[in-house]
Amino acid sequence: MTTAAANRTGILVLARDFARPFTLLAPWLGFVSAGIAALGTLAPEHARSAAAWIPVLIGSFMAATLNAASNTLNQIYDRDIDALNKPRRPIPSGRSSLRTAWALALVFYAAALVMAWLADPPEGIPGHGSHQCFVIVLIAAFLTWAYSAPPLRTKRWGWGANLTIAIPRGMLLKVAGWSAAVDITGMEPWWVGLVFGLFLLGATTTKDFADIEGDRAGGCRTLPVVLGPERAARITVPFFVLPFLLIPIGAMTGILTGNTWALVALGLGMAAYGVWIGRLMLRDPASLAIDDNHPSWKHMYIMMFVGQIGFAVAYWL
Image (cartoon, rainbow, N blue to C red; front, top):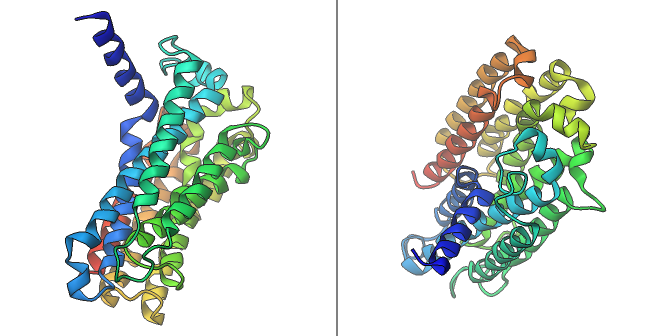
C-alpha cells in the first residue's frame, strides 16, 4: 500500500471513530421517520411520488452527518476529560492531532448544511422554497457548538447540558424531518418534537452516570455529579414515562392526525416501557455509576427507535 493510500485509509478510520457510527442511527431514523409521518399527511398523489421522498432521504443523511460533526467537536473540547473516561478515543490515544480533528469537524458541518439546504419539499407541496430545514439545522448546529465549546460550554451546567441536547436532537430533529416533507407552521410537528424533546431532556442523563469521575475533574456539573447517582436517577425516571402520554393526548384532541388508535397504543406502550426502565434504574442506582454504559442507556436508544418507527407507521395506517 502506498503512503498516500495509507494516509487516506487513516483519515477514513479517524472519521469513523470521531463520528461514532452507532450514535448516528438515532438521528438518521429520527429524521426519516418524521419525514415519512409528514408524507402520510399529504394527498396520495404527492405522498407516493419519488420527488416528495428525495428531500426526506437527503435530510436523513444530513441528520447523521450533523451528529457526526457534533461528536467530533465534543471530542475536541473534551479531550482532557476523555483522557480519564475514554482514553482510547482518537485524540487522547494520540491517533489524531487537533488539526485533523478540526478539519473533520468542519467538513462534517459543511456537508450537513449543504444537505439541509437541499432537503426542501418539491414544488406543489406547502413549504417548497422556504428552506425551513436549513434554518432549523443552523439553529441546531449552533446548539451543538454551545454544548461543547467555550465560552458557553453548556455541558458544565447540569440541566443546561440536557437542554442543549434535547432541543436539537429531540425537538428540532423531528421538526426538521417534517419540514423536508411539508410546511411546519402548524402545531402538529412541534407536538411530535415536544414528545421527544422532553424525553431526551431527562433520558440523556443516562450517558453521564458512568462518566462522573472525568466530568467532575473537568468541571462538568452533570446531574449525577451534582446530585449523586441515586437522586439523579429518581429525577430522570419520570422523563422515560410522562412525555409519551402526550401522544394519546395529541391523538384524542386532533393535534396529531395519524391513526388515532395506533397513536394511543404507541403512547401507552412507550410509557409502560418507560416504567420498566425506571424500575431497572431505581433497583440499584449505585450500579449506574459503575457500569460502562448501564443498560438504561441502551434502552434509551431502543425507546427512541421504537417511538420513531411507531410514529411513521401510525401516519400510514
